[in-house]
Length: 328
Image 1 (cartoon, rainbow, N blue to C red):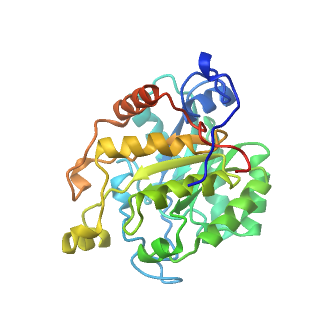
Image 2: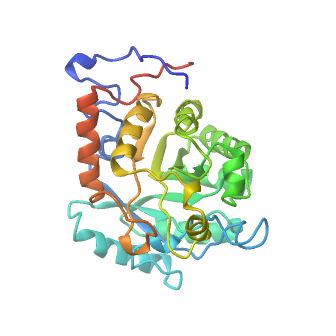
């Protein structure tokens, strides 16, 4: 791991380069600065598939993947995009009453794994709903091309467009082991092409995948910091019932070094200290209903976990980018 103390800002009086006093560059504060208030994501299941499911590259999907574990009840590909958005607004109004602006989040599977005409119909239907100010498009790096990026660039001139890539790991041996059927080099190419068009470029990482040590995972902070990523989500590995990884775990649990809650928070405190402070952190951990989990789920609700994390940052007197220097 290569990281050195970042010299910017005045940490004695808690002034951070992202413009607020929290010790990491939070997504919620970024959205408030950008749009003047809370913006809620509304997840959509557009009925897409993935190249490692439909046979074009493989079968079975990622060994860890269970979309049901994070899709809310109102998501169903049999419903139109408009219906899913309206039901999503109703669903979220109970918890986030002050939200008046929304992003249509195409989340399930790979949401650029279709023809451009199909994507145009889906995305433009979502943007036609008056309260939708943009799109978040979850996809894989091998499901994007210049034609699709040119189209998304044109949408980005009038709406907030985010392309969120499933990175998961920077190590090809891990990607192969979990049946991703693409390489990290393809991920880098996709991120560079997307960012070069001025599109908000996001990524998703999983910590604790089999075969990766703590030093392996720590090393990724420097690798990701060198990419033109606007934001990142971090999840700890959760093993879900019915997945191929669940079978692997039950057959050989010694291969897995799953994080405890305490160990994960300690790891994330060290990790973000070596992460580029310009990167917006959307999440530090995953949150799914316990009924899907093979192992005993740890942790309280995500917002309570976040309080523990921020308290630990204060106790350690550290922050995002403390041990990071641009160009190191």
